[in-house]
Length: 115
Image (cartoon, rainbow, N blue to C red):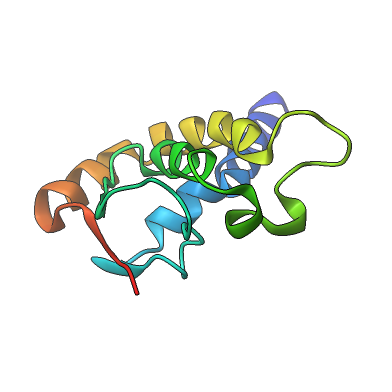
C-alpha cells in the first residue's frame, strides 16, 4: 500500500513539474513563444540536464506580464508559481536524469528561436 502511494506521488510530482514537462517534450529547436519564455533573460540555448529547473530560473528572470499570464501567481500567495514549480521540477529532473544525460550527449542543448 505504501509503495503504491509513493509511486503515485512520484508520478504526480513528475507531471506537476511543468518546467520539466516543457523541456522534456521539446525538440532540438524550439520557439521562445512555444516555451513561454518571451521577455526573459535566457540565452540562446536551454540545457536538457535539469532543464526544468533552468526553465523556471529563466521564467523568474523576465517580465511577469509577458511570461506568466494570470496563473503566474498562485492565488493570494506572495511567491510566484515558478518558485514552487522549481522544487517539483528538481524531483522530476532527477528521476529522468539518465534520459536527459543521454539526450544532452546525443543532441546537445535546446536551441531557442527568437522572432
